[in-house]
Length: 475
Image 1 (cartoon, rainbow, N blue to C red):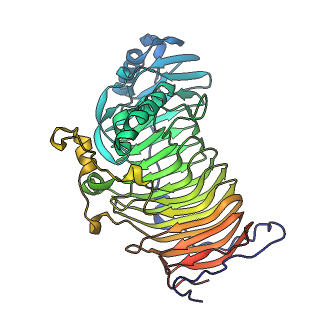
Image 2 (image 1 turned 135 degrees about the vertical axis):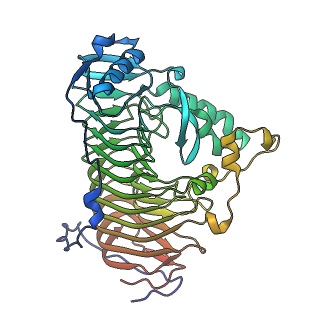
């Protein structure tokens, strides 16, 4: 059946009790590229380099940056494994090198310095804009064949950086500068993989990030396996994303468990004028067998979409208490195309909105206007990038060719919130074998060419899903 324009259509079935999961339909074969994701090699040399030999002290007080780096540099000459005796090792930024495995056994904790001076500034990209930024606590930059393994912990000790951010918000917001405060705050990430390949991250726990936890940037063939992220210990750090995959390709994320205070598993590809200038996509990504607790998004694409996000498979994911579930977000100055996205076999409990998409996300943050009293010529370079105008034909994002299937959600606030634009319809979405219980059914606005099959929504307000400004909607 084709849904006429502006018609509210009851895309739901009232149930007296939550249905047991229906038999999973036979899924199409995975795309051939799925077999190519992840690291293709790991460091082979097992020579051991103990950080104690180079002066590291695990007392939680001694700053060990130089000692740990000396062990890494020694291991890089022949290839090898950097090891630690049990203890807590305070450190600033360290830089891994080709052929090195950093092994953090159970009983070992790296403690991030709480002094920003221990994180030297370097060229990077943050939230979609290339700029100088403090190095991460652990850095893999311009390298290949590197691994981080073990059951130990990396503790970013991020609270001073959270406090700095909130103090700056109090200063910036009244001035109309919400759009730039995140970039001026300069908080350290916990683990950065940048312009690198064949990188394996396995087993470690990362907690209390100062900013993003794991940032995979401009990289290829990376595996993140069995990572645990706990960023809500001792407070709720702003923008403490779990894993951000940013303009990178052939990345595998599996068996990870993330509790954070922003997007849990997130794909990004640049922001606004600067992201369109760089124009590098995130593509060929598999995220599977993962769990999200607290956080803003179980699986998020955006809001940095400028370079495009495509060829993505997200499978067998679970969320409990996460704010949003499957989330596509952008803004009208981002541009880029989000397409060929497959999300299947999803379970959610107490997720505010299981399926949500918008192209006008968070206007106070997304749109940059210079208040009176500033002279643009004297501004920092990253301010100028943020203020560079993007014409509508380049700035309008597009979401298309997305398949969501085999989803069960209970305790939702609103089942579906899907908002396209008059200038950019949500095109060719497939929703199949989906059951959601919650307070409201929600709406679909500015969509075209959707195929909806076996969608069951039990809404407390007994209102239907409102389908408006939409054409060729079949169910």
